[in-house]
Amino acid sequence: MKREERDLMKELAAALPDVPRWVEVRSLLLAGHGELFGPDGEGFALCDPDDELVIVVRKPDHTLIRQALARTGGMGSVLATPEDADHAARVLPDHRRVRAVIHQLGAGTERLLEPVDGVRLLEPAELEGLRDLPPELASWLRLAADRRYLTAAAFAGDRPVSFCCVAALTETLWDVAIDTLPEYRRRGHAVRCSSYMIRHMLERDRWPVWGAEEDNRASLALAARLGFVPEDELVVFRSGGRYPPAGETSPAKI
Image (cartoon, one colour):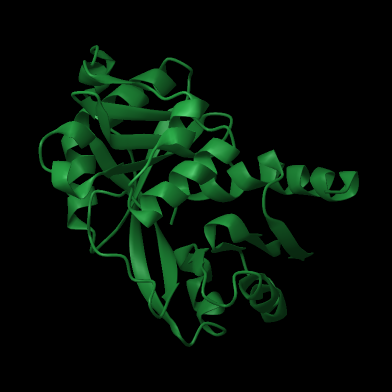
């Protein structure tokens, strides 16, 4: 990436407040990840081809949105604020529109500071050695490792069965991604794993952001159990064939 483009991405990040609705786009801009289309006035599109994601910021020219989406093969998901969603929708006729609820941690976080047994951070070599994972889980663990984001795992015996990783990172916030192997769900592993990672990041002055699509009941329930409360919302556009089933994965990497 050229220095001029990197400087421009940092300028665009600085122009957006460090609040939950912007955590993902600001994370990409600050780290210099993704491909920038624009800006067009105050608006731009940012494509993260590794995650098959396009983020629309304000109201860029529709050509920029199309170009960004083309970098995902036209099948990527598109993220926009409610204020900008109608503008983006005009060039997304084959995408399904879904509301995503953005949460922050509410009162009563003291319990998250309690030590959690059977959970620890994974070393990069351990992440590389993981086998027999569901494809989507393997994909976002690999992406987190490539970007040097932390990942914690809850263990059942010697086997890591639940994973919580940093999906996005800014000066004060981080985006929570959590998933558990199907055969180990509903046994409390996701709660232990999330609690450990939240405590770890709070000690480093990073507050968690939890995003969950409105039809992902498991993720919404887990967020509530951990003490998260709804604060904002975003709109996700998913193309045909990219409608993930409700599960324990928080769509923090929407």
